[in-house]
Image (cartoon, rainbow, N blue to C red; front, side, top):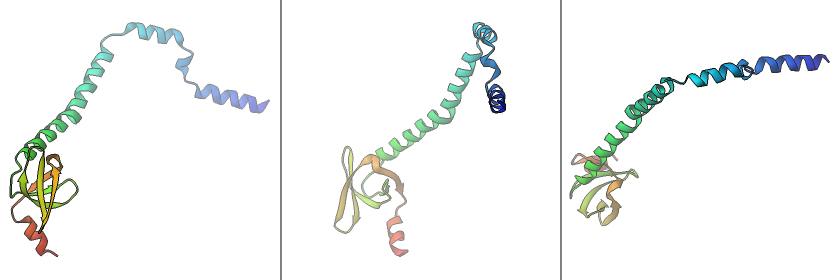
Length: 126
């Protein structure tokens, strides 16, 4: 008996009061207004400014970098490999990694164009 009273008291305390106030909830939904619309527009503007716009800017910079890759450029690939561009094609780039070792990679795999002499500087730091 005491156990059921404690259980009832706990359940009554945990159930939100708005569940029982159906009339007030119906009146609140009928009012509507521009509040939810303004909130939605504010959230969309926030997402545009913090997520979508910087991502578009970064993608545009990467497209410009990839389009500007030329022969004898030292590049960093997305895999972390550093090499020198030996020839370029429409969608691919031939990158020389070592003497007599050349691989074909997609242009989009180029992450950065390194300053001239970077490969020699890396070899001398062994």
